[in-house]
Amino acid sequence: MKNVGIVYQDIYAKHDTGNHPECADRVINTIKRLKENQMYGDNRIAHFKKIDPRKVSLDQIRWSHSNSLINKVNAAVETTIKKNSHVYIDGDTVASPATFDAALYATGGNFAAIDAIFSGEIDRGFALCRPPGHHSNKDYARGFCIFNNIALSVEYLTRVKKLNRVVIVDFDAHAGNGTEEIFYSGLEQGELLFFSIHQHPNTLYPGTCFVDDIGKGKQQGKIVNITLAPYSGQKSIELAFEQIIMPMLREFQPEFILCSAGFDAHHNDPLTNLGFMDQTYSYIIHELGRISDEFAKGRIQCTLEGGYNIKHLGNSITNVLNSLADDNPIFKETDDFSIRQKAEILEYTENKLIPQLKAILAPYWKAFH
Image: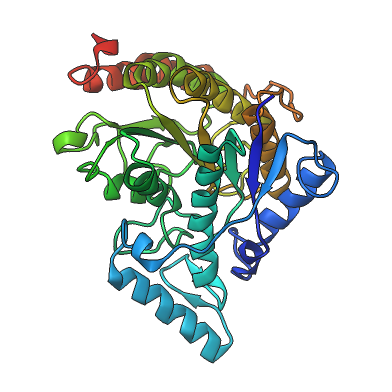
């Protein structure tokens, strides 16, 4: 059984968004679910460890973001304090008095988990943090996100930990467009392979990150957008892993796996139209765990992105944590989503999407020759 670190602090709930899908209840109720399953709190099982986040410096935030973004977020927070009300940084991204600190601790929570992995205190980690990050790019906070926690974690691994090959697997239903934009031309040092598994951009925010967006320069062929049709379910994600993701991971041989862990691809999520189940997330982590054990000394760090059905968010995160520990899923839904996973949807995945991805990526990967 692997030791799994859970990063949480009350500051993540103090990022107050009001009547908004990305709300404090997401983490508050998940913590309750983890306590019920002895993963967090005084009665937690020994291989689940509490990790305290720390506050990152603004110099570290500047690894991925501009001073203009930092100033914009800071100004929005100051306005919320003066007016005693919420301020929208963009059309759907809310700031409150605690937002700036919460964002610094969200990134810092990921750094703390990475440090604990490298020290041997834990084998793998999950940052149950808010605000999320994968839509934010160099200059803009957007899509509920402030600072890009996963992008900054890549920089931390390559700049501070001196790793050479890092992978991001983003399985939020919304494309990781901010992460893609930040790394579209590659890293200053080291190599990054970035997968974004998301609902087709013609059908969902942000409307970008198509299969033929593959990076440029030294990053060309190392950005992979797996654009699932609406109502795609577990069988589609299994095909994507078997035929695209796993062969590429084995060829790349990552030293560390990062996950933008979004849970809004669940079939009951109010904002999306995919067909994942609670146990789908166990499958994803199990497959990544096989690669991490083979090439990355078992190292995986996840950071919370989306997921807006409170019940299934808690269930799915519980399953992910058990899978990180190399255990079986606790929550299993009946595998009967014939309405959501119609034959023509699976046929699209198998006979159009995957062959298209292979053709686009073949010039860069021996796995597809």
